[in-house]
Image (cartoon, rainbow, N blue to C red; front, side, top):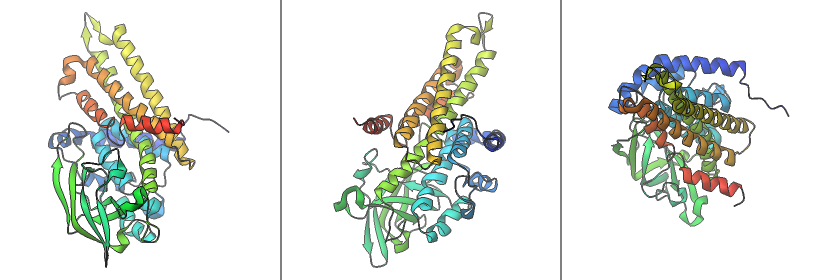
Length: 383
């Protein structure tokens, strides 16, 4: 078996292409989006036109057919500019579409996946509830069969893209007596009677990514809206695969935040002078930078390893959780150290390091808390 840590020439080219796009077209939008807490929806279509939206899906479904490593390269570069923009992209390009690709019927792929990859329909994913976060089995949302389909009742919270999406992938119990086996996924169009955006949520981090609470009150959906079809519906265990593979991508975003923090700190420490010389020349600062750089590289390698395993078709539960755990903590550490290196200026909005820290803290909680990752890892170790 050959072990290589080199990106292919194609992957290198893609990373450079996307970096230029992120710096030229995304960066100028970030400040306004953060202040208004509004995501520019037109960016989905722009990224679709460039082949960045359905990057990991086959061409026949409107995607680019790229591997998971390339997907992670995109995520790192976008998070390096704005984790908020990446959050909205990811909710659409993974959580709101992968269940359809992996478990949906051909009819569902034609109706939802292809338009989503073209930027014609925007997706959201509804799992978390006010009383069910880490405990996904504690969902209260139900889907009861009716003569013409299903009737959904319940609520979802912290739903990315919910304020402007065209459809939501919703997790609901179809039969609570079966425990987690009784959870299925449904496609609910935004204009469905009974679905309402209850309120838009104001956040400390990823402010440019819009988040809302959804309520379902006798929300009727057709029979063919259960993902996988009524004869072979996607299960709770399929949902866990979505979350596991998704954590690899989330980890790549954390690497992007950590990298951005390092780059900002390196630049500032070379410009800022104290006692007649740049502060980078002081061992205290130099050691901080060395430690930050080491954590960035370690996190990146863990992400690449997990992404490679996904590309090999392996269900990498342990590696995905390890990458999520380490990369999220590395992002927080690097952003916090950058704040210290910037000193008082780090608290000023004209510099980005405060945003990096706010955004990094989101991912010690979101997409599976630090504690949940440790639970998963310990179980994989047989503990």
